[in-house]
Amino acid sequence: MADLFTAEVRDTLTPALKELAEGAVDFTRNEDELHGALSGVVGRNFDTRGGLAGGWPQRKRSAEPVTHPIMQQTGGLRRSLTRRGAPGAVFSVSRDVVTYGSDLPHALAHQRGVPRRGLPARRVVPSPEQFAEAVRSAERGDLVRFARGLGFGVET
Image (cartoon, rainbow, N blue to C red; front, side):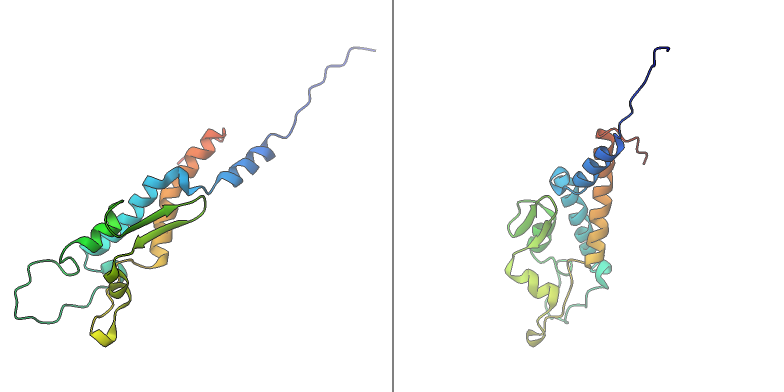
């Protein structure tokens, strides 16, 4: 009987796919890009006077001249939502949750409105769908880098 040559092939794809699936969502790897994406959405909303959130109601007429863009009397609310570490800024990241917002006292009043005080809602933070798309967009690049690191030939 002749000598037998054999080769054993083991499944390497399943463990690699499992590692890819387990590591697919890890917001901590991509914290700066996530903040940039979310603050970019809010910045565009300010720049367009609420255009990403259906538009902001106009100001009430006043005898005093207006010296600043709507919703930007001091700029504090915008800064709290677009600059990490600014007074009122809320931004924290865990593996699977991103918390983003402002804890300035007037932030929620502007977001929801206070009808009894005559303050209409002027949504500074657009819809959850717009934020979800910003997160997906930021995470797409991170996921490609992660998959490549595991040896997957991923093209963008």
